[in-house]
Image (cartoon, rainbow, N blue to C red):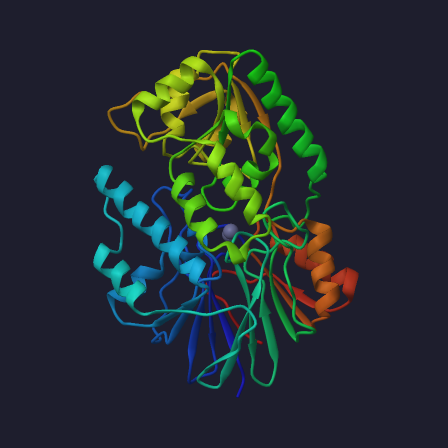
Length: 421
Ligand SMILES: [Zn+2]
Ligand SMILES: [Zn+2]
């Protein structure tokens, strides 16, 4: 029986990733995420079919952020690594809290989130599981702690990378891959981009931080809570005594350390965690601003979290350094700040939400995605007959390149498109 893939979101875009895999009997949903940078927030298509199983590849909300919606009308099983389940709960619960504060309604409730968690089963990497007639197996994707790529086997082998990184970082080993696949569904965030050398980025980050500390100024590092914050902690180990960690990066770091089998250097991380300052209240924040130091805090793209407080307090100070650590999605407050020098966030109500920022700003690239060369290496290793490119700003172009380089079928589907694999 043939297997079909329906692209419900994340096709030709970064955000709201979701693919439904069906063999006419069983429907498996790979990811069900949100596109937060759109106003209003966008969700993937909701298929008519009953979903048997949802597999969030990792905890980032563009992959897991809409899963609770599926519990409005049914009770699919959720299968993921235990760490992905735990981190997804943290991020989804936070979305609910933020929406309550902003008096916005999310298309799911706390009850739906609880129902999702109740129906969840953790699964380990490289432990095959049968779902109907399809065998699934998770592989370490090397993207964030707990992240997985998903191999589905029936007559054919189909491999979905999710978000993937091939090279090692300080926090994680690079991805592990199966031997060969017939069909490869691959992310293409960096499909036409080369990343700078990691060592160079680390050197730059340390240099800026050292400069700030020498003058008792502040180095403000906005970061994603999951993965990036812990990576930066490891990079800045020698400065640990001067680092203050704030916002959701705190809980994420604690959870990730608890699930330490997913990370390398866990002992080093533990030592760093003992030396840094864990910011718990306003008094501490004000103290840090007075004394200077390194602040590592959420949100990475400046859409919310304690970073806003620091910006409000420090935006007039040209000696403060703001050090962005990775990819900024277009039209997020972080992206716009770097482009225009103005911080603007319409979603903040009753607060100072539009001001010029005089701080020194730098963008560094600690990306957790494979760059073009790594993506091509993944394709080479898996030698598929068909490649489907998703999760990128221009996957069409990447698909065309893949077709030319490897002389195989490659394409970038549109949202709603159904493809026989
Ligand atoms: Zn991701
Ligand atoms: Zn993603």
